[in-house]
Length: 403
Ligand SMILES: *Cc1c(COP(=O)(O)O)cnc(C)c1O
Image (cartoon, rainbow, N blue to C red):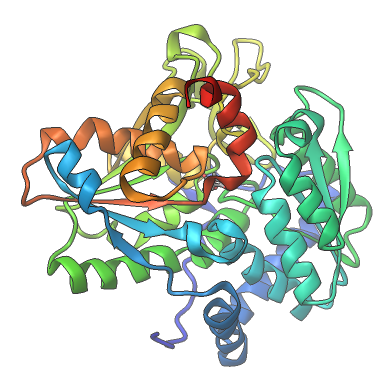
């Protein structure tokens, strides 16, 4: 893999979005983090260690798989799967967790705090903490603890402390609040390992840089396998890290259409969803957890309670770069509802022998919608952000009876 030491593209703002909306006490911490990241990113030793572990520990590059049967069944575009489900711990989250873990170590921190929704980021953080011999506390809403039991047990086995969060809707947003509270209180020896391209600067740019390996690999692989760039790239969008990690390498290829898929939950009209761009009434710019971005909230500024069958997409805000890409029109954002997501999961399982995460199944639902409208010489590249083993309880609850 290339080893050029370029200056990272750290942006405090993406158009009007992003920034640092944080309490005064956290300013020194985010400034220290920005400096450390800038320095590490251009440091050959840091980059070598990061790339070595991505290869020898995470198992990168992850495969690009031509989905022959799925493509045939849908009867249109040729479909290629970027297999982040094959990364160690089962999702793309490990790329960012490893990058930030190495950075925290370099900064002399001994303790990591993290938030988690689906549990994937908690598992990735606990894994990296074990690998780098650091203490790890993971904040998790009790609703998510209930629906993601296997991941909770995994984190504990990895030596992390899982801290249940009872406030608010007891999901990801509330876990983030608690993690930030912990960080404020322990900032001297603690790094906040944020799990998506969210939060105050420098997190959105830093997480993008750590996840951009997905798109860099995929671009080389699709050129190798298909001989040309894809017509469309598709990824699900929770906070937006797997999507930005894929899109980044294709942003300047004007002919490549980029599509982000949000969670439509029970349907956009029901108000029970997490479609920040899809809900034209509730989804408007506002400030949440350190950043100015699209956010589901009412006229009084009350943040809406979101719903999705997948814990990883169940969040009221989206990363600020996506807000910018939405307004600029470079990325198109669509949504998939719970029902369509379960259908997509089943079609992928039965036709390709792959159990995708429910989050990733949102992207596949969009593939199912779009591929038949495309011609056989066109190409869709879809990011399978994670594997579905963690979701089996949820999935069986809905479709177990019909098996
Ligand atoms: C966490 C998660 C997501 C959503 O997070 P992004 O930051 O939007 O990528 C998507 N897929 C999987 C498998 C996840 O674990």
